[in-house]
Amino acid sequence: MELLTTNNVWMMICTALVFFMHLGFAFLEIGLTRQKNTINILFKNIFIITIGLLLYCLVGFNLMYPGEFNGVLGFAGFGLEAPLTEAGVLDLEYNKGYTYWTDFLFQGMFAATAATIVSGAVAERMKIGPFMIFTILYVGLVYPIAGSWKWGGGFLQTLETPFYDFAGSTLVHSVGGWAALVAVCLLGARIGKFKDGKIQAIPGHNIPLATAGVLVLWLGWFGFNGGSVLSAEPGGTSLTLVTTCLAAASGGVVAALVSVIKFKNMDLTMFLNGILGGLVGITAGADQMSPTDAIIIGAIAGAIIVFAVSFIDRLKLDDPVGAIAVHLVCGIWGTLAVGVFGNLAGGSQFLSQLIGVASYAGISIVSAFLIIFILKKTVGIRVSEREELEGLDAHEHGMDAYPDFRLNEH
Image 1 (spheres, helix red, strand yellow):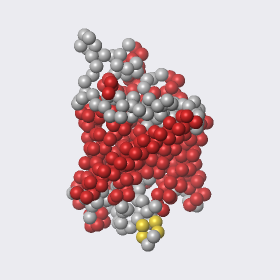
Image 2 (cartoon, rainbow, N blue to C red):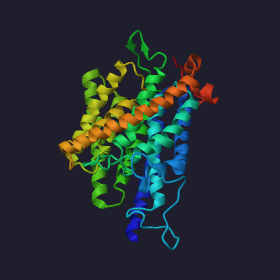
Image 3 (spheres, rainbow, N blue to C red):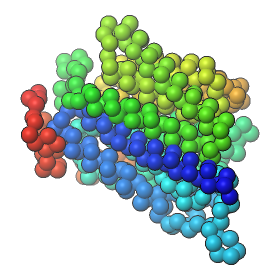
Image 4 (cartoon, rainbow, N blue to C red):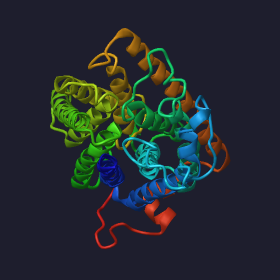
């Protein structure tokens, strides 16, 4: 009983840390965008976590962990119904590490993250209504179905060499990243981003806030990865936190160095995204890597960030916060790295990782395209030119984030 209590307390702490990450995402997104859209971004982030938890309670949790109906798609019923003993009391043996209720809350915090990734990529030009509809469908149905393929005991878990994704480089970050890529393609670039074939920088209005957001996210990753051990087991949790931090550090340093070499300037935003890229990259195998492996994985992720951001710009895709480079590209890298580094390295594991990446690409791209394309053809997904130029805060919310402090904006 004492062991269960210790494990359960650790899992609840990790749940709180993952919840805290939503503040980090909000800070990062508003910091890297213009002040006239601050309320809009904050509204989306608050909506994501609130509706995400409700949907995960009513549908998602049982859809993702369907029990005896494991497979491509299963469903164990609506709402939460904790397992009981024959005496009718809560079954504390539900999991050796924590209770049913803690399991739901911890997994529920992950569910909303996929839509948060999309929020940053479509910032400053997507209508709030269609985004909310997308969030409901993607978080309520797509994410838990996709999650069931691995974490719910589905077909990726039953491969001869099971697909491995410790804390969600693919299941969370790439699922959000693929949707972000589809959304950006269908939405188009912000006005002024690409002019006469040239890329124009649109600076964010509060880089200190974006920096705070990255540090909050790094702290939250202690729960994101540390909690994925699913217990307070000292060896596993300690190693996971070490590899997580080392990957983040090397990702940031290498991104900054590569940025200096490539662009001849010390770009803080590239430094910040390098940290996030390292975190995303290590997430798939944080419990399987040595410290040296973690540094290498993070370093490669940091380099990838710089080139991915440039490549996405050259494709004329407008991602204001670098979400596609961070969450999709580094998510894929981190997932494949499980087959190259650490305890699971090997040809059969690498093949399983490829199968997993391809499977999640398929469901994410198809579902995101269907949802957003239908919305585009029916209610429309982009605000008018006037609304975009004057700001979504005024037109969609009738509010100003800084009523007593306005900056002159282009």
